Length: 166
Image (cartoon, rainbow, N blue to C red; front, side, top):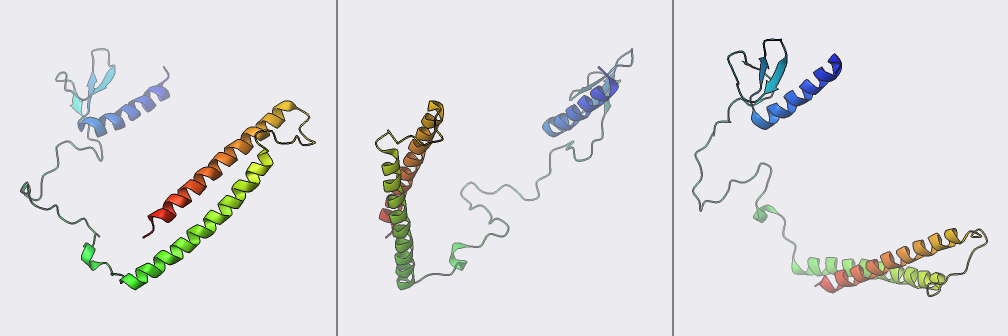
């Protein structure tokens, strides 16, 4: 191994080991070969001081909470009561708008589905002039079938979404 490769490998191992175990030692044998490990094998091993490495577990700043206590609110979180409430009439208007938008999308997808079914012609679409090669024709047929399936899924999803509106 060349020296640069060994140095890069050692650096990668240092980083991985320091994140995984917290302490990393470099040990030298009688011939001067260095080994990196997370355990102190002998007196010749030296603890490496790595920036950002945890050498001991973090200290707790607060005593542990009681088992039935509520967890503290996250930073930036607001309680549910702080959100603005929408009255019933406003919500019904929003639901009607949403229903109308979804119904428009459904009509559009159903028209697209009908056009795709017509183009697919029950699995036997007409060959085009640029499809002298049968493989190109089969590729186009497969693409048409994929598009048809995707559009059918869209139609079904839109119908489910409309059914879920109150």
